[in-house]
Image 1 (cartoon, rainbow, N blue to C red):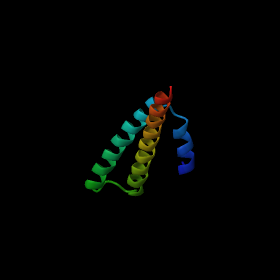
Image 2 (cartoon, rainbow, N blue to C red):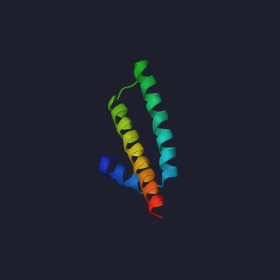
Image 3 (cartoon, one colour):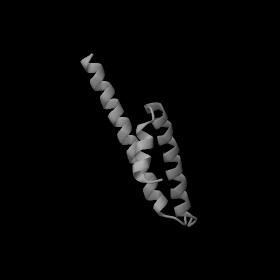
Image 4 (cartoon, one colour):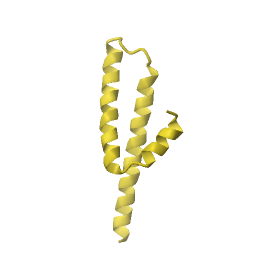
Length: 75
């Protein structure tokens, strides 16, 4: 999946699903790090891709929280 497709997919998700996605990505990152440490990882680019996906999800969660705070303050 291309990064632009991944961004569109993540933008469509509500914050609860993003939180679940973040937990899955963190778990996947841990498993990849363990595979790398035990010399079992063949495609090292997966680590970078996972790390960037985590950053995307965290950014979207922060934006959603900021929007919620700003919307609540104006009301």
